[in-house]
Length: 204
Ligand code: SF4
Image (cartoon, rainbow, N blue to C red):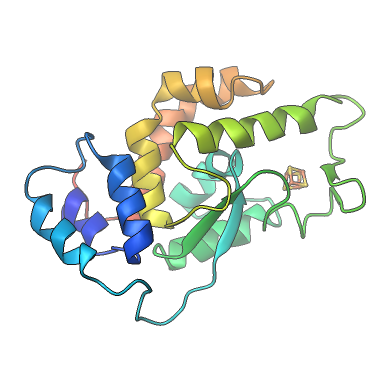
């Protein structure tokens, strides 16, 4: 299965298919051979007919925070690690994008549910929560998506790999984060490993 076939085999419902093909249009992922599939998808029923898979809600900047865990399957983080494992076990799981609390923050010991913020570094780095919200918005924006949009995880990470290179990551997504200079050095290898984990038969 090649990169294109990986995506096509995970065609989501018609609405999300059209959204994803639109976002990926013009990238190296698609070519002229996609036309028949696009036509076929346009005639698909509006909703998927297979077994429903639970939606995973992820804030924009966590798409990038969990790259390492997606690629390696390992994480010491108590709530991020299990979510990454869940996605690795089911790469077609739909991911719903959000800004602020998500399925990783909500069960985390550091999340303050009353104030809706992360307490972890709030004394030493009081700007962290605001910067994280900025990164959430930036991440969703560079993908051409909106809060509430859903996409299968493997398709979403192909989209990320297509749209976000090291420069975009550092200058448009995590630009406000105090850790960006360190993270940008490993970004390319981590996104490649994550895509490979979610779509293992795709050529490099
Ligand atoms: S609450 Fe803070 S430490 Fe916990 S997952 Fe969210 S951002 Fe990370």
